[in-house]
Image (cartoon, rainbow, N blue to C red; front, side, top):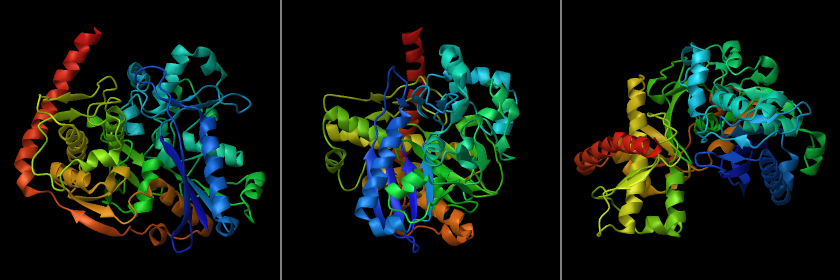
Length: 489
């Protein structure tokens, strides 16, 4: 038996997976985000630990026989977060999250200090990444920066609590802007740009490697007969790829999660930082990937549901079974700024085209379409980077909506595959990595593709209408950017 733990932004999920790769139990514990200022997003790491204990306790209570047989644990985690630890290992401040945009100005500082950053780190400096956050802390919270002895990403901090060891995998480390992504090691130049050294960094391993052993007291608490091995594991998107079997060059998927991701697996380091494309290490050895990110995907629908006071399912139920025309309303889903292709932490969302005849259903459809348009932007920039997509699997909570996936297919022009277990995501991939770490099996033998339950093709009747709507969507960004500049001048 193997456990996969996925530390997301809105929840922590733990799953139990047996030798036949069947999920035998799962538990999810919610998490909350604190936003002390507009554009700031933080979480207390101790809340992650409380959620992990609750999820694992629940599995131990509901599946005691299976938990007793656990041999390995894998971790999947939200990327880029900065957990700062003092000399005694205590957390010095709340974790600054991946969707926090306070460090926008510090991105230019980082790239000025380390002129080779885009070539070596494979990415344009963006406020969501970890390195600019440390420059922000040094400039705005100097006492905390001086006290900082170690910097861990979110899942590495969970591993530290579980094992007492500071270890990180290549995929998650890629999102820090401190990794030499092509050579899969820390970059001294990147660290120096933030006044840090390798002494502050965890040890690096591949996601399939052994990386610590569970604390004996925790093993007893959860009824485990032996102390399970922890795998090097993966950042959330790489773990999702492992769960999908996207471990071969050319494998692709779209993730309709809190944020949105378009992913392509590559067999070499292929940086293309212009346009906001990320080039990261994969969680499996000798593989990399290209990825574009839209910051507010399923979270856009969640925001709209909160605003209307309705549940997401109720909002979706107001839409027709088949979309026959685009909404007359355009929605820009920039609720937390945008990453690909704009790298703009200050831009914010907007509804355009409202009239006295606008209905709630029009606006709900606009939200779904706006997220789809943002994915189209990402897919087009990936094509510029040499990764032309024709089809992709779809995962994440939003993939549960057939209507949304249908819109996404028509807007992007891709044939999209809905999966039988499309919402297992990172936790399942983490369990696969745990198995490899324990057994030493080949990656391809364990990371098999998921079963597809349905393929949705682009609707040819909507192609022209969506092309016009996409043009209007893209025309709005510079207008809103200009208007916001005037407002904040």
